[in-house]
Every structure is written in structure tokens, then in C-alpha cells.
Image (tube, rainbow, N blue to C red):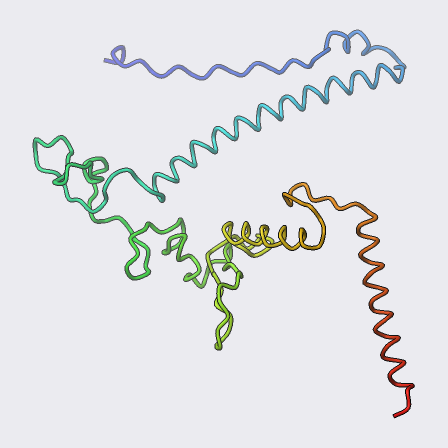
Amino acid sequence: MADCFDSPPSPSPTSPMNIDGSDRDSALSNSEWLTQREVIERRARRVKQLARLYRHHYWALMEDLKSKHREYYWTYGKSPFKEDEHLPPNGTDGIGENGKLGLASATGVGDDIKRCQVAGCKNRPMALTKFCHAHILSDPQQKLYKGCTYVIKSMQSGPLLCCKPILRSTVPSLCPTHFQKGEKCLIRDLRKAGLNISSLNNLAPKLHVVVAEFVSQIQSKRRALRKASVAKVEPK
């Protein structure tokens, strides 16, 4: 009976890594002294080989990350299957009443999918929380997100902020939509000031422009102080 089931083959041991130029290093291993050039060449070879190993390891980790991201997105993100359908009747090959695939036919579960705890929201909650990404700020225990600080409208009770969830480390504290809008406003103001700039990514003002602006501000402050002092000296 034991011959019917073959045991899985044991993994073969990994072969030791070969260091580039090891034959040359072995020839010089018994030398008492090495020249500076020999030392530099040996270190350069090993550094280049180590960089290649790190590069291969990085891309292997990236492939692993992609597979884990697909699994996470399938579990907590959007799904091509309809989640609000019940088990299909026999003979329909997993097709629901409206002619679309149902999640129950693919995974064996029906209405047990967890939803965001905000009333009326049908999105799935994020991992380790009971709220979706759009309502993650409703979780008082979360520490990763904050609200967008873009002022949509000024009201008597105070400014009305965007408050879309963004990462707490985002600087400036703006969502992608309002960050692009802020860049456009800044470019327009810079053009009004005389700087012909098409994109902030290549923004590199020359030193003489910065110095001229500082000198202009210092002179304006001095003129204001001089006018203030003259106004005090003049008799009434």
C-alpha cells in the first residue's frame, strides 16, 4: 500500500554561492602583502556582486508583494462577483437570477460578507477595522489616516474642509485632487509674479531671483520703518 503513494521529494540543498574572481583571490590568499590596486579591484568585484544580489532579491520581494496585494485586494477590495445574490438554483452553472455571476456560487458564502459600519455603506471594511477606506476616519482608534485640510467653503460657523482620508505622513495635508488644484493655483500665482513655470516638478529658481526678492522685501520694510519714524518726528 505504501508503494501506491509516493512521498514528496525532499528539497535539494542550495548550492553555495560562487564569489566573482574567487580563483584569483585564492591565488593571492597566501600573499603577505597586497597592492592598493589589488585590494580596490577585489572590493569592487564583491560590491558589484552584492549589488546584483540585492537587486535580484528586491525584485523577488516585489513579485511576492504583488501576489499578496492581489490576495488582499480580492479579500478586502472590489470583486467582479455580485455579493448580494443568494445561492443559484440547480442547473444554472452558477448564474444568478439577473444573469450575472454570484459570489455565493464561487466561494460558498452568501450574505455573511462584512460591511462597513457606517449606515448605508455597502463597501467592505479595511483590514483590522470595521470601516471602509472612505469612512476610516470614523474609527477613533486608527492612527494612520487624517482628513484633507483643503478649505472648500468659508462659512459663519467656520471653514468647511474636504476631510477625505489621506495618510497621516502626507505633506501637505491634501488629497490628490486638491493637491493638483493647489499646484495649478501656485503656478498661476508664480506666472503673475513674472516666473514662467509650466510645472512644479522642475521648479528650480535661480539664485539671483531669490536674492532680488529678499532685497526687495528688506527695502520695503526699511521704507516702511522710515515713513513711520518721519511721521512721529513731524510736529502736529
